[in-house]
Length: 259
Image (cartoon, rainbow, N blue to C red; front, side, top):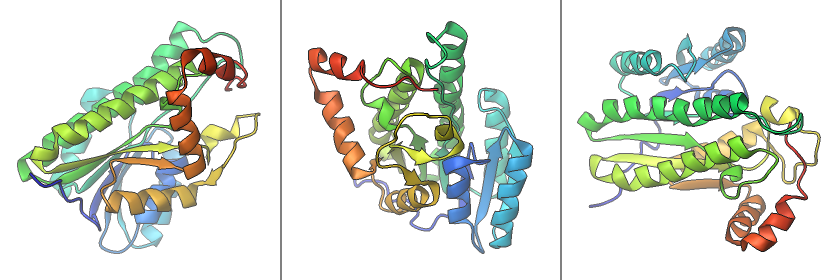
C-alpha cells in the first residue's frame, strides 16, 4: 500500500503549546487567508497575542486555554474543532523542560514532565486519530527532541519523555499508514525559545524559532517521517546513541546540568 499523502497545504491545523516558542512560530508561519488555526496553550494572554498576529495575517483562529494533561477536556476540544472544520494537521507540540541544576531530580518533577510531555502528547494524538481515521486521511506531528536519542544525567525525565514520544511516533507512522494517516516525529536541537532561555551553558547550532518552524513546515509538507535538525546536531545525536556505554557514560557525565 502506498504511503499516506499529507496535505501539502493544510487548511485546518491544530497546534498545542501554541502560546510561545515553536508552537507560536508554527502558528504564525501557517497563518494566511483560508486557513483555520485551532490553538491551545496554558497562558491565555500569550495565546491571545499569538492569535491576534495570526488573525492579522487573515487566518481564522479558534483558541482554548487548556492543560494537555486533562485528557477528557483535550479530547472534547479536538472533537469540537474537527466538527468546526475537519482537521488536516495536528501538531502535538506542548511540552515542558527541567533538569538537575537545582539538585537531583525528584519524583514530583519527574512525574510532571512525563505527564505533560508524554501523557499530553497521547491525549492529543489519540483523539486526532479518532477524527481522521473515518476520513482515511490526515497528518499528525509529534514534538520530540534531540534529547530523546541518548539520555544524559542532567535531564533524565526530559530525555526519557522525549525518547518515548519519538519511538511511539515512529511506530505510529507504520501502524497508521493503512488508515491513510501520515505521522511525523520532530526532533529539534537547540531552538531559541523561552524553554531554552534558562540554559546557562553553550547551545551549539542554536536556531531561531522562525527558521525552525519554516523547516518543520517544509518537511511536513514532504511527509518526512523524522524531522531532525539542524544537520550537525542530528549527526551528533545519532553518534551519541550509537556509542558503547563505556564511552557514552564518560562523555555524558561531562555535560552541564539543565536548568
